[in-house]
Length: 276
Image (cartoon, rainbow, N blue to C red; front, side, top):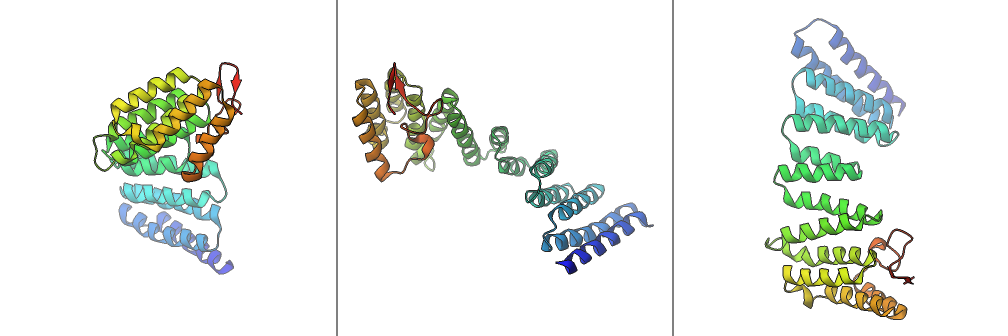
């Protein structure tokens, strides 16, 4: 590792010497960029992540001087990947810089990709918008699903419902996407259940049948209908059995499990009926 650090320092000094020396404006930054890249990679091999990140930023600045904006954005992404090891704040800052450059050169899909990597709700929302602008509907829907999932986990059920239902409507007439519709409707229905309103879920099931006439013949539809009936009958045992049976075949993520995944106290209620 010591050898790699020494190499990194040597290459960095050569890059700075090029910048501070005589030469044509463009060419000296091109030469410096070559040394900075070697320096950053040497620091990476030594696992000196902060030093590698800082050199990648210098490399990005060289690319900007040469009007190589795509390379500059890529260097910022590399810097972010290094900073992820030591500083979340530094990583996010570099990703923001990369995203801004990608947007500036019209690479909306690339911008969306790196926004989503942050895992931040706002990042996924903005990514979905950018993917739609770039007509990448599949990627846009993946980001929207993340937004819906985070919304459901934080108790924003109505927002999640609207997103899942919108994706289902967009997918129903697409031969490549229509097979995912029942999953979107299941998620929307579970969010309805988490709101604790049996009337709403029954109305929703009618709407979902209108949207997809095949939905009423699926396990997902039966699951939602049986859960709604158990809540309406205030039958705790039936409610638990319905979940156990479905979960034994199709494993539910914790947030999708009405007996344990609903926010706001982790419960599903009808009136004063606590189903936990």
